[in-house]
Image (cartoon, rainbow, N blue to C red; front, side, top):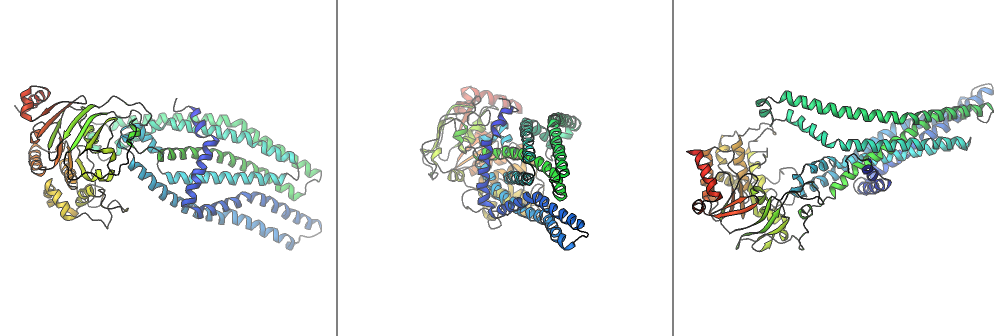
Length: 637
């Protein structure tokens, strides 16, 4: 089905969907903002009956003044109560109530943003890593952002519709004593107006939904043009003019599409606009006729004549509110769908979850080690649990990692090395096959316990731009030692200096810290004030230190020296050889010279392990590894 198919929105914005979203919204509002919400409801009721009150007061005020004039003099005492009532209604409705509503609105918005924002972030952090491997997932994530604000807007759309409905009914009731036909005509003309607003809303939402990917691409070009990390390549390859032209073309195409959509909506609304003003003109003529036949007093005529304009504006507000309610309902659907996404990786990999609860602790100390049995893995092709998977990356991989064994994993790009590493870290779940440690299935191990027992340093690591101590110590922040929730680095949980310095020494970060102005307390990067920039190799050493800080049972080093110069690489691997003694380690590298520190080498090709053994045996065998070794050796000849 096309992403711009109106039928998609017919389902998404149907009365059933809106009612479901309303119930879901009111449940959360009742839980997180009951008091301000009830205050807003009361204010909306008063604002809704304001036009009818003004019609009623205006009628009696004018009739009182006219009667006094006919009697030969104006009686200020008789008109004074109506003047006071008129002023109070205007004051309370236009100023005081709006200010009260705005204050209540701010409080409700804050409550919802806090409650739903925390739930959104928690959900994003619990989704399996494979969710983020597909571009369509970012559309889902982007549409569900700011859930508290979306909930607040949906509630206010419902309140505006509620207020507009009260206005329409109360104004119609003021016309009923004069003529039921006028009341009926005023109500009937609202039907096509509301239907048009809803239909235009569906088409516009379908249009904007279809533009999501194009908007994301344009935003990406915008980030490339302005991002700090991209500026070297931008200038080196002289990309500014080309990408700027591309950005202008993309934005211009989006503007043209929006302009055409707006033109269609304006043309479609012209007949309804003519009908509305035709009916209002007819009602005005009828009121003039009733005045001529003395069926209306001057006060009632003036008040109802003004009421025709109030009815038109109330009708427009009703149509706008209906359209906005529909739009915001679709936004709430995005939030609900995101919050309801399965958190089990098995659901995303088309695999039935194991029939066991993940509550067992990671077995320590290791006795048998890790076992990978006939593991297959493929990345989801559409970011959804029901989507068909793409070509398998791993094809029946089986291996053993004994306690204290150092194993090197080598192979060409795309062979599946990093994917296998992420499976061993518990970041992915295999589509079939199983991974165990000391006979305990990964699915049965408590995730926090597993996370505290494995660690890794990746080639594509992230730069935590905190202080040097915090950037290293953050590796222990989520290890399960504390269940407190606070800032990124809570003041009550400073990194243990001894632990940080020990990990830093293992990765030679102590040399870097020695030249920083405040040592380990110096901010690194460019986010915090006074931050010191680091080279790529220095950042990589920080990532290696972060991997060491947990004292893991399994340490995976995925191209850990890719950003280091040869001398620094040789020193790091010398340290690895000493520090990994007695610890199970998996070393992934393209540089086969570094693989020689391993007890055993695994050769991965096209998702399968095709060779394994010590370096000398594999070279003597004359197979895949020997060919790779010979090719790399030629670089240094």
